[in-house]
Length: 138
Length: 128
Image (cartoon, rainbow over all chains, first blue to last red):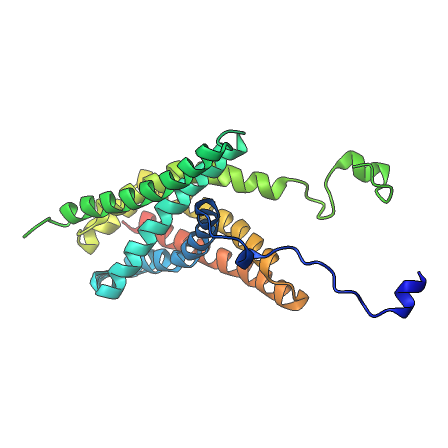
């Protein structure tokens, strides 16, 4: 008690922060899960805009179609597709962990790699299907 | 769990300092399980609507099965994203007033987006 009164506050050890660690795949996947989640959160504005425009009428819907067909619109939609597939596969990975599986050193790495490969693959597959639905090469 | 400052009643209830126990965690899991199939349905619906005229789009969006799937997707997503953003805010925002304000904004945003999407689907369903 006497020490607390006489000496200046001691510098206490801080818990190591993100920048201390070497970036690892599993850690990046954890961060990506959060970022994609937050992206999808704001992406719901686009969904609301699309649905409301459809409900309002053909002119409002034409505006949405024009924007979604533009470079910026397509970029947003492509990003949304990847964020959705990545967050979904990442979520499934978390559910596997919740059930008590997949904690081994190799399993963790495998699951992380599968999330990336799966989300990129699914995004490309969905856009390929979409390309052909839209009429394919003309 | 045998911390001396905890009353026997709080130990029996097991709800912790936030008084809600594991309900946040559990609701996040329940909505995420539901969203696996609902997101797949949502993606298929969007693919079905690609390249269609406005008349074609509202006819499909307003049909009962598509509308019900869309509404389930919207409700579950609104709740899931409300829980998720709440967790992000609590993790990173340490200023009490800012935290309170953002937590409220999160609630307002999720309610507004959820209701806007719901209203649009219902309007399409009952006018087509």
